[in-house]
Length: 98
Image (cartoon, rainbow, N blue to C red; front, side, top):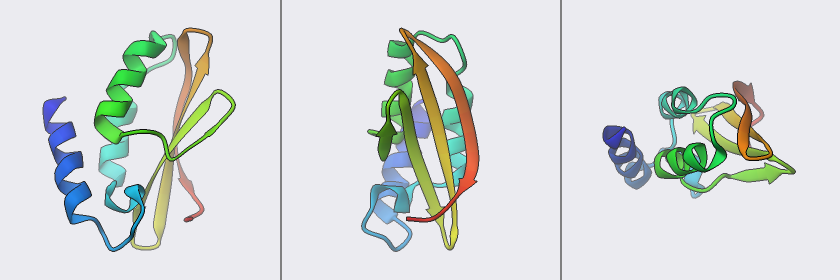
């Protein structure tokens, strides 16, 4: 998992041409983060892993936290929902670019 955080730091420094944090975040990094969390996992464990790998969420809606990647014109969003003290769901899907 340490290499993921290092990759995020390096990619974040290099970026891909935008001012937003998601500009340096790749689909591959979102996929790795998706694999690090799962339904019914204690929320504090999942939150720590996601924050270490991806940083703070780009947006939140109620109990849903979202991180977006942008590579060229393609965007993807990782959405992790919370149910009480556990992860409810984890979904990675194509999305509209900001």
